[in-house]
Length: 201
Image (cartoon, rainbow, N blue to C red; front, side, top):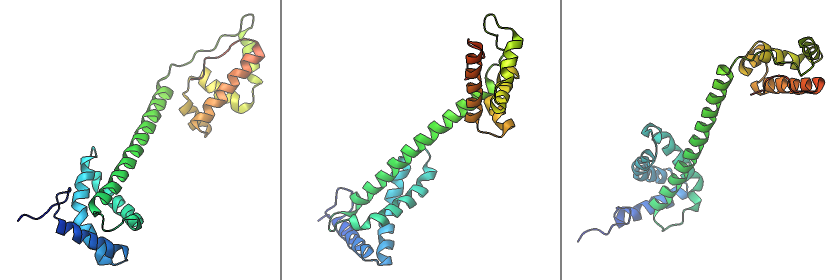
């Protein structure tokens, strides 16, 4: 007579033995953990590897899965089958990993796009003065700007440096460089009564 098997393809006897091992593990017996690991690790690793674009990361996720199993071991309720519970933990680990990888890829893509915009943007020309204003009046207004804003504005609009280059030169962040130049442009528009300077993008 063939042995009765569970839905995971394991025999009822093997599944019962795994339940016994899990109970020992919950009681703090190290040999219980070792037997649980030996029984579950190969299948869990195959499951994790199948869900990754690069199977090489499966070992790290396997370690993370068993760390989660250890933390959640008290939530397992014998004599329920151990495998579905353990694979549920692995599924959650894999789902978190995918979300984290997706967010990381999006951040890297945005950083690369921002760097390309800063490095490859057109070199700005000298902005025109407002109607009825001379270039001298524009430069006088520039001279009235606070030093930090004036330097960022001149480097970007007159010398054509990217905000990344300005940030490196002034030893500030790229966002700070962009903000200084933007605020300088707004001050010039206010002082001259019209739009001066290219849009800070």
